[in-house]
Image (cartoon, rainbow over all chains, first blue to last red; front, top):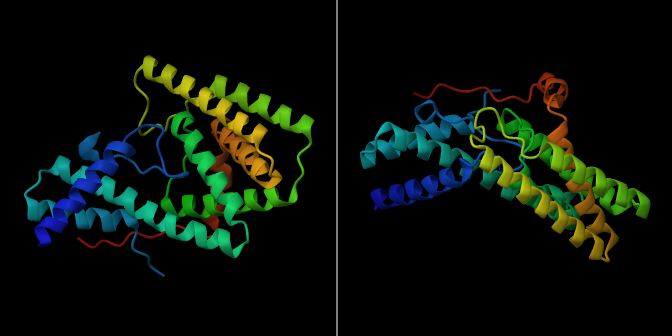
Length: 39
Length: 208
């Protein structure tokens, strides 16, 4: 059960990442830095 | 007072998920980034309407938020360096827009001037990408410029056919504020230094 919840969170986070990685996309005024692994 | 930052929560939680699901470090970093953005968005989604409602500008500020979000997607603009700064500045700006939108009566000539100024700045400056994540190709830059110009024209059209004055004002003021963030690239150094002095920055706690 916990694994399923973690899987769901992982998929959702990946989806948000795929949108948030867009250079101009942001919530309102904040865009966090890319983690070192992805630079 | 020590506050745990959203970043440290996202990193810790992503490590737990990656360990449970046997993910590599790259996937973990993507989950961490996505989680941080999601937690931040949830906080804003909850906080914004409550604050707007308390100030009595729910409709005007939400319209301003929507206008900024749509235009900002294509045009980019200055970013805050921390989430707390963003939360503080965006809430203050959106509430101010809502209040001004209710109180102001914008003259037709001023309305035309603002639209023209917005159009010129968008054409000249858009898209403004953050240094951490630059737009790499010229083609994409051109597409974003075209898209932001089209969105601006659409917003100008919507504001021109809107009968309700407060809604019209919200769109114009939000549009103008968003366009200003394309020009004042040095404003964060002066304005945010002032906010830093208010000791609003979170301190990260090492949970590892």
